[in-house]
Length: 253
Image (cartoon, rainbow, N blue to C red; front, side, top):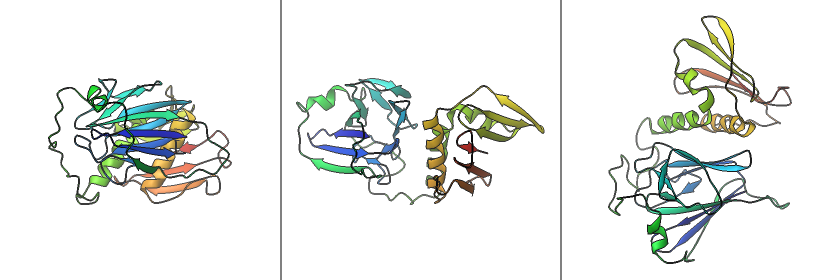
């Protein structure tokens, strides 16, 4: 269970709790952790649970993501780490799930709880960052679908993050197909020949990639519905097969 505390300059605090293993963070309302604060990009960062650890990953945000005042692209969080996204600070904890049923969606519960003195937020803010609005392509009031291509751009950034181990092959025009046969067995097809590659996934990474693909195409994939065949924004097709139909774990081709 991921617990995310969002601390604002005003001293107000929001708490987001979710059983999901991956949470999107940003200003757009569609994010799991939506933050209405200066300097926060529409799709700013992602929090992912990987092998029992929480990883923060910046998604090419305008102002960057900072952990304890140091800018990071990808960082494994430790207890007590403070994450600065724009003028807000996040404190993340990973909690064991209780036996009670938990909601799948991240639920925000605003409160006026103070987090120490107001300068606690200032202390971990990105260097040289003022409170003036940033020259983002979209304003706080804009709806997510106002600009053509925004959804597709977000999708590709998201997919790049989830498919990081094989992303160079995705960009390689000489590779005609990528076959992921479970987290530890990956093949590519180049000039009609199959080659096994050394790259691997964790199970959490692979499952997160599948859920991300399914969510984008508006489909569902699970043990009850273990097969997905969909078309991606560039016209290519992707097929997903999950256990029990796939013996070696989740497969993507």
